[in-house]
Length: 521
Image (cartoon, rainbow, N blue to C red; front, side, top):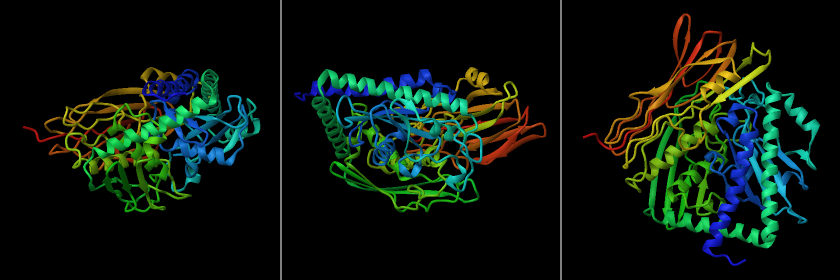
């Protein structure tokens, strides 16, 4: 096949459409509100080496980490047609234990796989010490069931003993089985579409176009980096605490731009902490790839070629490159946001007017669980809450949006109240929370939930001690606030806490506003 700009664009969209259709299948067939409503998942296509060829517009934190899971699966298990491998081990390309990846080979009539497809979904419970598997942990062994690469589908049939072992270790086996079935169907959709693509154009042409797309993305990314002035830029920012008594935890970056290449050196970041905010290296890679792809613009395909001009240096044993058995439940959701903040802060002097002020810098993770008195069955609910986006030179920040490393939706009130013994008593913008400036930061939101049964709740949040920073003279956004209200009164809670709730107790989360941009006139 003659590779021209037109054929390259056509195949870019063909590969992307495979990943997008996988996501549609997963959304339509998922069981839990977390996947069906919030769309907390990603789907992608990979070449025979495990390099990402295309990812749907799903979760940015999965950009750089899913390929590592796919390679771990390829290395650990021989996959025949109709097989699928599952894994969630953060130290083998995962992020945190609730994110379970399912990998399937695409033989398309050949003797070896030409491609792989993968779906990664956040399961609302995978066991561990707290409902929702997002605990205030000090070791990964407290966070849930660790799954190394293991064959869960063989020849098109679920491996019953493997699935049974997993379901016996979670609080909500029926929901988990339903979500697994949805992931299996998403992967089968991807396999079928790639087989059709190969049948239509031939294996040599399709694999050649996949390789050309990676080279194309590399050229576009190098050009975007070359537009940044050469130099060495530094930045530092901190998480409030680690949730178990440790103080602030700093992420430090030295960023070197030279020609069409960028080196991001995080090795001076703080050592991994005793709490659950540790991030594995894959998360640092994802954050770096997200920021630079955003700078390069929408025309750049989301594939492994984008990563080639980036060198990411981390030191094992630090908060951005945690080693087993570190607790990592919050690293994927909280530390990933801070890594993005640090990269943007470092780039701000190099690209005045292009970099926004800090967005809320947290995902405001909320996990709740107990026994539903309506059914007598266990339930687990997980959600991340939106907040204010940072303002920039073009205008005010958006209000009540998911920003940076999260790209999920909210759980609609109707879906939440239907599925769980919970009542939403307030859901509104948090007026006045955006940072002041020539352009104001976006407003956070207020979400208050009343327990209708005895349950436990865990909150992993940040930016509670200090609000998101402003830029170019703009003010900080308001820090977030967590409040538990009982019959005896209100209690202001820390950013990370675990609590028992009784019927009538309410949990209110006020999310941070975004930073302002420019001095107010």
